[in-house]
Length: 409
Ligand code: NAD
Ligand code: ADE
Image (cartoon, rainbow, N blue to C red):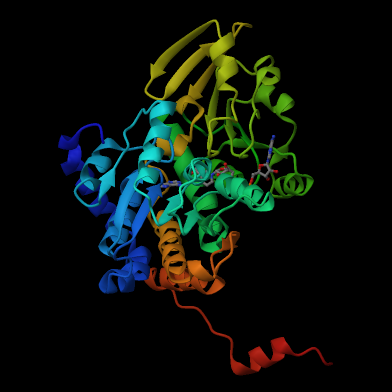
């Protein structure tokens, strides 16, 4: 179920283009593909459905699995890629602009296939599998910080029914995807949507975690005057010593030309900020769910609403000031651009493939817990990436290994 099957030729080109820049995933998946290690298995994928995701899905299908895929967000499917993917995998159920009801119906379609394994982004599929008691699932992987947060609570409450590998928490994932990936792609989305200049603008970044620091770093590189808001004293201090201004959102909103949320927490920009916000402020979100900017408040209280450009909605506030909401408050890098750069998703999806292969081989020895990606696999991905980049590094000499194991004077 997709929007328009005739769009497949452009989607196919996008997938082949992405594949050229994904040598690590190619290498990590090669053995499984040659040996058809996933033969007889059904794999449900719930990831933002764009070209890099299609490369991952194609490789899993090539490794012998039947792949059923939908998107992890109602607004991030690229319809041409979805059309091309119908020719490569067992089932595609996704289109750009799904209603919330359709979004959950599509996840339900994946679960109705009785998958053996799930690859999730945000944990909506895993949560639904628990709510409707899908008993076919042997294990799952999770792509993002917000999904891992939800799954760890499920584990703590003792309700998790199968092992999950937190791919997000691999070093080859969050240090690159969350930081450099979101840093570049969020700015890409903002600029494609608005065509404005960043240099000289006051841009507020809410959250100085991996995503927030990536965005702040890249904004500074483009000449923006970056202000950070935080709730964690250590992160706030890091931002301060990295040279950013740090202040509460209520103060920052008064001078912000743009606010970008990257917290994974709800109600970060809300009524108290709209009361004082600078006229003409742009609002964008890079966090997983559309809960960080209080869009419901804007919808209920704005005097007028107007689509000024694709992905830009102008709201006139009760105090007469205007704000420009980008991408309806959803992930700006995936709605207004193509998501992360390909080379970054090469690392993340190599982690996804490695995690799936590990689960297929080990799920029956694992408990119903959230596991990290094994360190050897994480490092294997880093070595493959170094090789692909033509970078050599030193190795510890035997004397150095001995020295590092000793403590005597
Ligand atoms: P993180 O936990 O490393 O960082 C979040 C930071 O936000 C923390 O430092 C926390 O103290 C801070 N924070 C929490 N509440 C706050 C508030 N009210 N005001 C200011 N700061 C606050 O998480 P992360 O890996 O940076 O991920 C952040 C979000 O981005 C998550 O929802 C994650 O799933 C999502 N994500 C999106 C993309 C993307 O492509 N757009 C990529 C990776 C992760
Ligand atoms: N492309 C596909 N999945 C993505 C993700 N989780 N973040 C950014 N870009 C992506």
